[in-house]
Amino acid sequence: MRDQDLVAKGASDSDEIERLVGENQGPRHPVPVPARPLGEDCGRDWSDPDWSRETPGGFWDPGRQLLRSIRRYQRWRGRGWLGAVIARYFVLQHRFWSSVTSCDIPLNCRIGGGLMLPHPVGIVIHPKAVIGPNCLIFQNVTIGRGHRPLGVPTLEAGVDVGAGAVILGGVTIGTRARIGANAVVLGDVPAGATAVGVPARIKLPSVG
Image 1 (tube, rainbow, N blue to C red):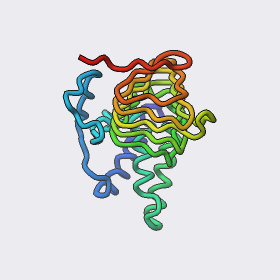
Image 2 (cartoon, one colour; image 1 turned 180 degrees about the horizontal axis):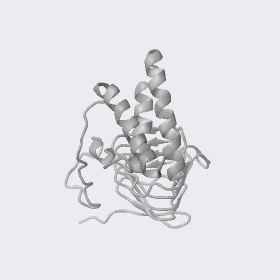
Image 3 (spheres, rainbow, N blue to C red; image 1 turned 90 degrees about the horizontal axis):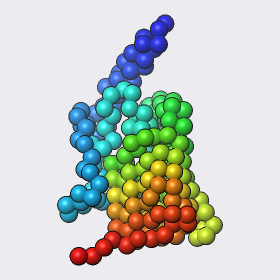
Image 4 (cartoon, helix red, strand yellow; image 1 turned 30 degrees about the vertical axis):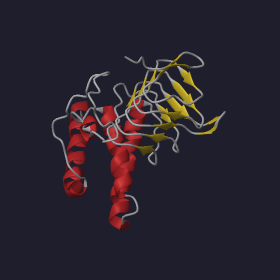
């Protein structure tokens, strides 16, 4: 069987499962809405998840497909024997898309709605970390456990994390904070602030 036939068959099987369980999946958005450019907050409530940011643009949309497998698994687990069967299907999807992206984002992660992974390669998120709604995480980011302070990170709403950044320990990254590329964050970052460097230095937003 040719590669094109295999891809087409996989897409067909996935569509059939989605059709069978679609009534339990919540609202669907067939056309993704482009994310608002950085800096254009315009009074937006970043704690309100924008689910359109996670809508796959097609079968080959690895970052969004990976997130979808996590969402579907969390929705169906613990819902009787039928839920267990469907959840197992999404476990297989999660393994596939994790292999494609080389990401380690566990099925039991606590991730708010509207997460964007523009370049989903090499992203590692601790299973007990908390990712708030409408966050943006670029490639090769690590969000993990640390000892000073002890614990795992919490990212509040609308946090942007640049490529190669490392966030460790029981730190809190405030709403609409920005983590620069390759920064190593070992302490709290206030809301709206920017963290850059190794170790990260905090740059507060200018006033006026």
